[in-house]
Amino acid sequence: MARIHRLATLLAMLCLALFAARPALAQSVLRDAETEALLADMANPLFKAAGLSPASGQVVLIGDPSINAFVAGGQIVYINAGLIDAADSANQVQGVIAHEIGHIIGGHAVFQRDGGYGNISILSLLLGAAAMAAGSAEAGTGILMAGQRAAIGKYLAYSRVQESSADAAGARILNGAGVTGKGMIGFFEKLTQQMHQYGYYTTGPEVDPFAQTHPLSQDRVQTLTADLQNAPSWSKPLDPDLERRFKRVQAKLRGYANDPKATLRIYPKTDTSVPAHYARAYAYHKSGYPEQAAAETQALVKLAPTDPYFLELEGQILLESGQPRSALEPLRKATQLSNNAPLIASTFGHALVATEDKANLKEAERVLRDSLTRDRNNPFAWINLGTVYDRLGDEPRTALATAERANLIGDPRTALISARRAMGGLAQGSPDWVRAQDIAMVSEQAMKDDKRYRGGR
Image (tube, rainbow, N blue to C red; front, side, top):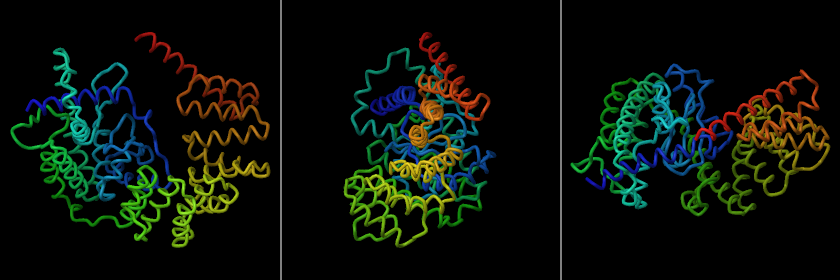
């Protein structure tokens, strides 16, 4: 029992320290047009069933290999890459998203600068299991002082209530959206197996359910099963299109994020499926084998010549292999076939810039501006647009693009300096001048707030 108590308290301390030091937006965000389109299609019915506007909801992919999902304010659900890797189906991920939306509609707070308690939605007890597997449970025995125990106890109780509430809300959301809850149950069962694998058993007299941040996984499964099995959607078959798309996205994510050797073990050359070609293309490209990567991509394009995501990959590999001119045709087609998807268009704009041909600058400006009109949250696109303006000799708009990027990545000092420089060369009252003024005002206030915060610590 003492071992379990130490593990639970260490888990709570890790939660408090790790997320206070690494807010969600400070972590690496992975962006991919196909992945974002899939996550939106998976989540939109759930946001709607929760009474939220799908246009205001968002699912963001985080470049973290741990199996986790969380919310951190607003109507945004953060999903770790490790969770996508571990999931068996799109429906399982939908179950996780529904649970996290349950936190959103429950108004569960997140950690603030004042150190108040809040929600860290760590899916099940995997963080605790990982800590124990690494030997951290024993290392944490000396962490707590007597005065901290009451605070930890309050946090644990608070988190358990939130998780139970999010479970119940998630079940209602799935049922309301007409999505089977089998995936939610299946994922909890997967987590339970992980706990047993690490030796962290969720049953037996040695486990104290009051010393855990989340309800015990088996208890959660039993409670949820009753709510979900009684819904008409329980027996509804999985959406075949979502499941097909999920396997593609999962494969490309594995190829991009995982060790190439591990990827090739999962997707051997004998596997000629679309997900396998996808995964191997990224794995070979990551390993520095452009010919093999190109061969896998060509196989995909041959299977579906008008698939914008296959064409995007073909262009991306050519571009990153030092062949920007050859990348233009597939990227131009990908942009057109995807209805000018911003992320694909920004890659096309980058290729136009990378040719270093002045004849391509005007097209690059048009493509990049259109991309940023649809999605301003793309620092790399702002870099390329700034490069275009620099080569065109447009110093004010070069400065404005720099200010936009700095504002986006949280660099208020650079944003303020660049915005003021842009205002000095733009026509007063013009849209670009007004935008530069907005950035200057926001950045100046951010610097003042940061100075007050640092002075008050």
